[in-house]
Image 1 (spheres, helix red, strand yellow):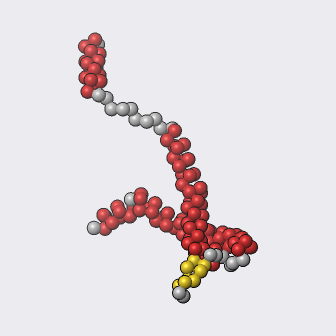
Image 2 (tube, rainbow, N blue to C red; image 1 turned 45 degrees about the vertical axis):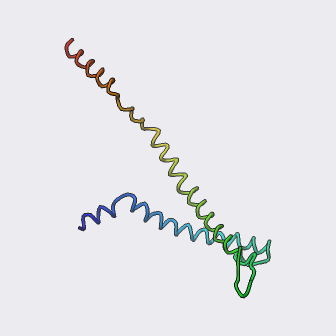
Length: 129
């Protein structure tokens, strides 16, 4: 039972997933700092609000609607996705391309005719020796 659990944990995709969660959390903090330190002050300068979540807010029958809150979440998502893509995914893809250049693709499997011709050739070679 423990052996199966160990194999599951040591499988590459589980470790990759754990690494992705940790890196995603770290990038989330970086994006939050970027938004709080740069984007929110720009929004405050342009719209006169403290952050994007308070932009385009309105109230109907004591229900508060905020378009800015949706835009804020979308902006955070795009920042995290861009950071992960440009700092992790793209460099790893380039590295995989470089590694693949050194390897030759495997040849196509032989057809039945080619296999028969190869056998005939090999038999003829052994008869001549």
